[in-house]
Length: 389
Image (cartoon, rainbow, N blue to C red; front, side):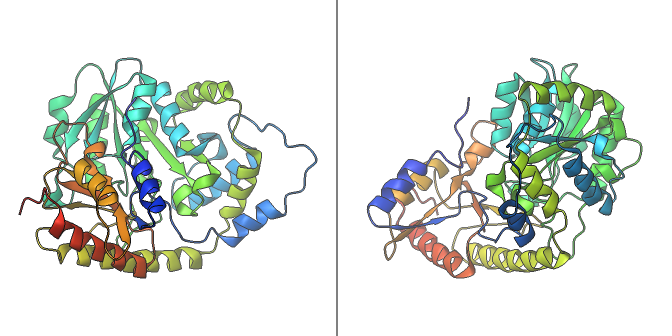
């Protein structure tokens, strides 16, 4: 079971804090944005006498509200197409265990969300990575690259859109290309849409749920964690129009009994969050993204593409080893009593040796702290013994 590159340096961050250092956390996607008031009020106003089990597939009330949300964005589904899960993480695990047999393969463009490796390990699924590159902003690799790794054991392709860790926003044209590939080889197309609401510069989000003719192949994964800044709620869902998948996935859901009752009450209320909330959040994240990308590209030897969505960047630094650097900056460095915690990008790749000079940063802290973090990074790169340029 692989260690999380997002959390594995936590002991060094904890020690830095014990030593009196201020640590700017850019390592994890924990937004500082306030959770919608309606969601919090739903929890505060709960009135029941028994904190009971709910249906394994999720309460009808919550699934009905979810269908309302998804149909507003053109998914054309019913409550029967939704399986409520304990976070997006469980949705991914159930999807893998439902659709992919032991020893079979799933193709994932890399870098990818590090825990996909963990979920695959738990499910005895083999990840077949395909490299995307920072020079192209981590765009979808050519379809020919997918064709090269498809075997008799290939069961699906997984993408995250907008992407974690890169922030890349897949276009409708790229999704259409994946559609044709999946239909040609009868593969599932798993799409992790946790960051759907975070698209910038007027770019539109596209989902395989918007495409005709691939309904039986599409499995969408979602969560309230990022959309409503409610990571601790641990509430997600699996969405598909494939009735056989829903029927089989329900067996896994029944085995773990149910998702939380309170979380689903809050999740149902969250669907009524006004558009003004997302507009304000989008404006704030756009400003943070612009600030971070500008500051990074202003540092000698650093390159960072400008992402179209989510709230992450992957930057290439003039360093010999990202793992060593991310530990060193916590353990050995401070600037005016502060330092920075980042996630080494090596943990987001499966291909050995990839990402050695790259780090992922989450712009989930305020602009002032973001600038101070970049001040720290600028000085750290000047002092780091393993600098390469």
